Image (spheres, rainbow, N blue to C red):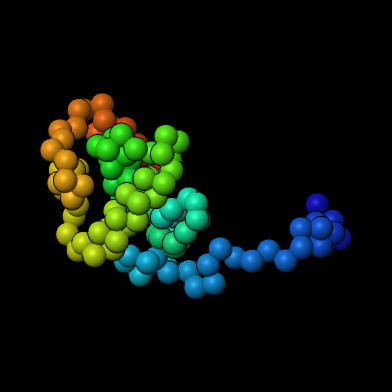
Length: 128
């Protein structure tokens, strides 16, 4: 692609604003590998996270969806409520959060199967 082609493409796309003007992880303050994390979907709330923190919160949200049976596909409104609660809790917590912690936080006595644990780990690893 020539420089002129690049210029035409840039003009056709218009001004592209970066997702975040200041690239810093909301949780750990890292500036490495920052991406947007959907805290909620509608209304859309996206926060900057490094890949490690993004993997952690994605795994926690996946665990919360398994524990509650609620996800964005079957009940978006309740899903957003749970995701906001998990998000605020995630930001406050300083220690490592276990799967048991997420069930207790949601007030549900729950024991994860090996398959569910593998699925949760894979969900988090996709963010790395």
